[in-house]
Length: 226
Ligand SMILES: Nc1nc2c(ncn2[C@@H]2O[C@H](COP(=O)(O)OP(=O)(O)OP(=O)(O)O)[C@@H](O)[C@H]2O)c(=O)[nH]1
Ligand SMILES: [Mg+2]
Image (cartoon, rainbow, N blue to C red; front, top):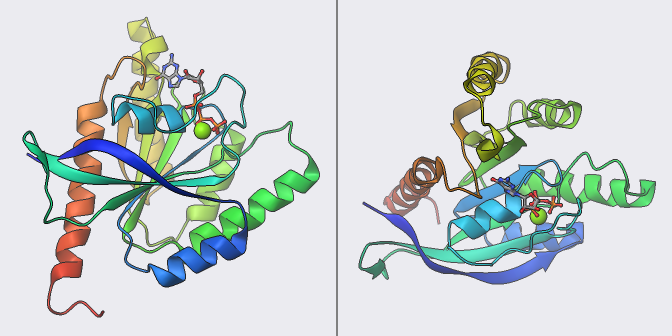
């Protein structure tokens, strides 16, 4: 079995759309996962939980991540990183739908994100994270309308599932899962997770690892244009 191994290395932070354009034009074959969702849903916490230590900065204050942070990491087995595989990438995105930011910041965010998704290689999956207690908020719906027709492999994760103490709450979320699958046809999988208690993380990790290895195989094929 292949896992996300060792530590992640912070590569760079992007806060200008020209930097985003430049990165993807120079590296059109980057393989990885973009973590995107409303502010405070736990995007940075989930990245950290894959490494068992602090990599991405997290905070109680929504809007902590203000730029696109790029991390590289290795895949490997229990013995350690597989040196034959290339580095893979996680993109920690600033949260969307944050009401308290200024008009100017919102405009910058729109341009930055617009450029990001326009240039994002199809070898990068989109992991949309939502708060399990408040799924499918207006900002999430807007994001999915924006995503519609995108060629990217898209997965939805409901985070903070540890906050659910009652069976009734879990049942309601199961119902929501069905509803959202029907509504957002481009979503391939829905996971219930907790960055805090680690529930569901091995399954989510394997889904992301499978996607990344598949992309690596596609790019290693002799038919792949270089
Ligand atoms: N109970 C619980 N709290 C969580 C979980 N994941 C994250 N949190 C908390 O939620 C808060 C926000 O987490 P972040 O990881 O900073 O959220 P983010 O989505 O990166 O936020 P922005 O960078 O502002 O967009 C922190 O106080 C975390 O400790 C979880 O699974 N369960
Ligand atoms: Mg963050």
